[in-house]
Image: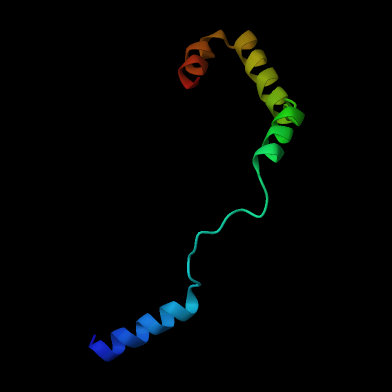
Length: 73
């Protein structure tokens, strides 16, 4: 690339990308984070219960699978 092409590429890049400045968030995010942490409850999806029940039934009927299940934990 010659210098003219480099100048064109530089000009195109300056047009495409806005200048990065010292931008501050529009509002303070910390109170929202604290509120969200206080509201959080532990919810367990139904498929987790299905997997747990399947693993329990599998260990009851096929006890030889216990080492394989422990390996994958």
